[in-house]
Image 1: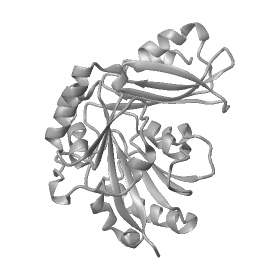
Image 2 (image 1 turned 60 degrees about the horizontal axis):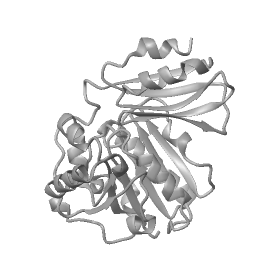
Image 3 (image 1 turned 90 degrees about the horizontal axis):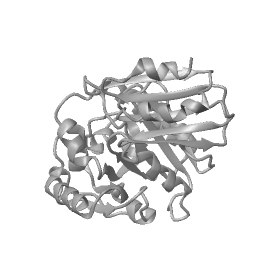
Length: 301
């Protein structure tokens, strides 16, 4: 069996990982016809997979409620991915890692089971929110380690930064990882073929070993809101304001105006985007410190 390339997309909560994955799936320049997508999330329900565009060129394997880099899930991940490759015969595999996972060299994963005979590491891509990088790096060691392990670093949301801020982030990334290829973008608007092409792998010995727990930081909590009730339209602005206090909030909710919305909150920016798909159930995930859960729940009572 010919080995296929394996890509990892990492990055802290709300950095733009799903946005990049959407662009890869949608782009006519993507050099693959059939893609196996692995969606990994610490939350007990999968939201990111539902945010991907409906296309026939990819298949999704969801692994929720933990990190695939954690020993407790690694065995299940290896066997599930191996089965997916056997069934679907994809041209490549793309893993979107949880925004709270500790990075590790993907080479460690490829040593497990029979994956070593099916896939090879193509590139570890880290998305960096240029606007919040300096602050997040101080608070969460995962942010720094993600850059250290990356073959490709995408500085995203640069439209929200000054040129001085962008220069400072670039300087810090260069200190952490002088070997990686760096792209400066907004909305992950990069040349897909360039990002996915070969030649990005950096020396394995240069990759900093991640230290610390493989679980989510103890001061970060994850809350899931599911409701068949609709958000009153007159409370939309307040709801987005409260949701925006979370480090990350995402999902779908129904509103009293009869429209279903996609919730996207990151970097202090909250959006409610109308979507075509319909469902009687609103489902959202809120991740942060000291989440105002009582107030968020009241919006849907």
